[in-house]
Length: 170
Image (cartoon, rainbow, N blue to C red; front, side, top):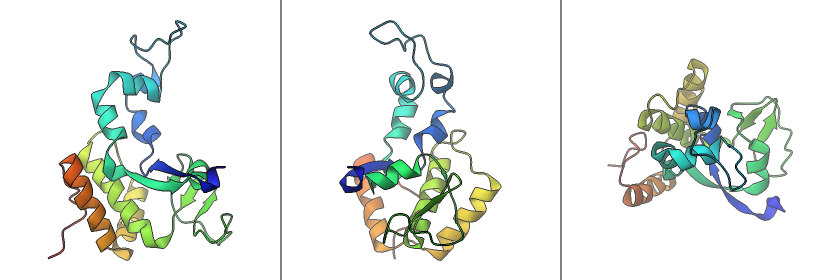
């Protein structure tokens, strides 16, 4: 039962940057399974591209998530949905019309992850004007807190690169 399982979720969905790789969209001659069938998509990109593997495993973009929410979110765009249907009980998230609304207390974190991924992987992540405006509002409404700083410091210690959108406190 996914409602009781904690999974790792990509804030920027792998499909969002995956489709910028030809192995994702067209496949690659190296992507042949044990039965001789060609494949493409995530597995082919993972097999053929070091950059894809780095993006897919970038710790700044990974967060724990309740499995049921991860499943419902799919690779939908982030946004704000009018009303509060509360399909997930007390969990403050909504999903409607291929849009996912996260809780206000983490919207700034999400925005800064999108900004980081666009900055770290130019040409692979491109925000629309609508996305950039929304994420800027979210980042201002939910500033960096100690929890986000602690996460960024831990990722830096493991991964070795900073997220410049999570500034250290003075």
